[in-house]
Amino acid sequence: MKKYIFILLAASLGLSSCSPFKVRSDYAQTANFTSYKTYKIRVDDLKLNDIDKDRVLNELSKQLQMKGLQSGENPDLIVNVKANHKKITDINNTNPYGMWGWGGGFGWGIGMNRTWTTNYNEGALIIDLVDARSQKLVWQGIGSGISVDRPKAKQKQIPQILAEIMANYPPGMKK
Image (cartoon, rainbow, N blue to C red; front, side):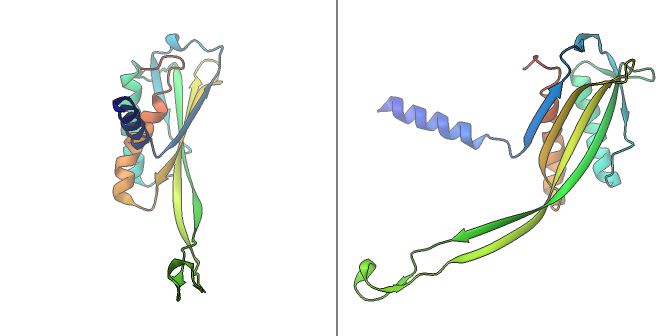
């Protein structure tokens, strides 16, 4: 019995710590990631307001430095940062038992359905690491699920999603 309680507790803790983000990455298997020591961030395609742009760039620099990379003018890696968002419509439907008439739960009555929609914007960040010498993409990380419409949530989510994206760099070097 104790064994089953422990398994249920471990499973519930594992489920409660799931990330709200969808994060994925891809990389060029021929790239030598140990040779990359310096980076430079390019923000040509980063269409964000100034507040969010500062959040993204500061956190990205912090994450890259935690990986042992240093900012430089003659970099090994060019870091392209892109952001986008899309409108999401959730449709929810309930089918309750309804209101029952005579005879308790087994008598006649009417049931009522309720359907409602929720519209919101979901943001995504794309991090491209390009080899400065060959000008080829060597690593890409994508994370989506940022609550664009909620400033306080977004303030917390930007560092979290960047940490999750960069957890996949360098490939094969999990913590």
